[in-house]
Length: 317
Image 1 (cartoon, rainbow, N blue to C red):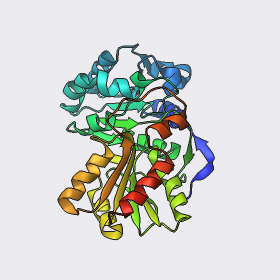
Image 2 (image 1 turned 45 degrees about the horizontal axis):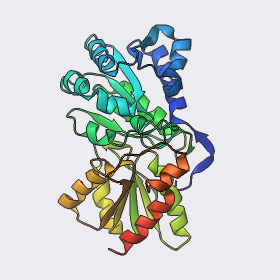
Image 3 (image 1 turned 90 degrees about the horizontal axis):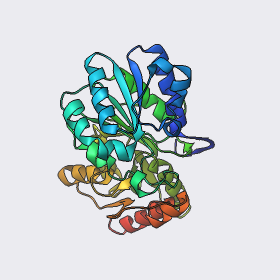
């Protein structure tokens, strides 16, 4: 690992739709619940090819989660799908009281997470969802790096009893993992070796962190990249080991710097292995519509910004 398979750009949402269709065809428990966004989230493929497993809930996310809870109590496995912004904020009361507290087998898919949501604007961007979901007891919180890991996570979730939140991105990304990649709950994946600094990333930022590490290597800086697909449960041991091996940490997430990956890593380091650490993420501000590159630059989460934070962090080492 360590190099992106750039010829294999794939959108997580496309993989999600095809994988959920297959699960719905082979597992009688699996139903797709849609918040009137099927063509965007790609669950429209289930409406077309396995209509009896597709339930249209309309623009009523709170009710959708209540229906999901009800279905789960009968032994079914609902996969509730909408934009991450609506799932994590509009429907959070129903998720907490009706799904997380009773520990029901509901799978929640937050599509269009982060900044890059196809110019839908700040109402449709989710920069707080990791913070919200990881605060809920019984909740599993996952963020894949690419299409391969999306499929592996879904297969895991199908076989795991309990509430699971999976954070997906809209646009195609380079492929990080080969098809034989194995997802393990609560385990980090070192996608690049390095001895000078460790970049700890999750979701879409793992691709950008690898790009940053490649740029830094040209300057003689040897950066390891540790991918965190599982935000909750969390691989504390991998973080402690990274701190011991490189002595300085930079976190990277397409999310607010508050309450997400950076906060989770800081919690571990301050208790177990204090070392210099800096965060890459969206600072205390709301975002706006724009092209992908413009948003990455303005909100300071591009590969160039990650590299800059690494240089800054190394000065603290």
